[in-house]
Length: 141
View 1: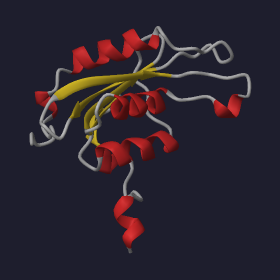
View 2 (view 1 turned 120 degrees about the vertical axis):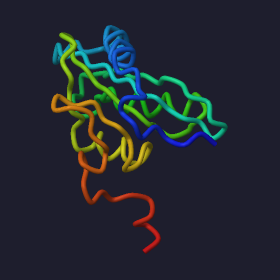
View 3 (view 1 turned 45 degrees about the vertical axis):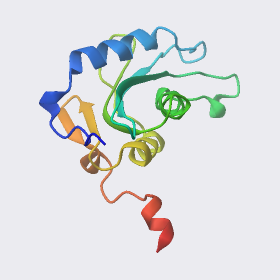
């Protein structure tokens, strides 16, 4: 199995950001007018590395809208599973966006503390984005 990416320099961030902007164009955001795209690298159990993407999908019942991160995690599992290793998210203008609290939890569950997150302040591990996170290991206590 290929180890997770731990060196931010090993990630083609420009390519990943481009994938986020490209999928953002497919977002369904008629209510907020705020389309969002997310892209991540994922490593499968067999070591295969692939890019997974997601975009936000709104609904007239605002509370049931799906964030781009939700779509990305769904795409991860629908395409064979694995672990997220590098993540980025952008808006209509290509600005980097930070995931909300709910989405940080989704990213933690599917990437863990070492997931590299592209932020306006530089690339940071998920352990800094969501310190002291609750995860599957906490269920066995």
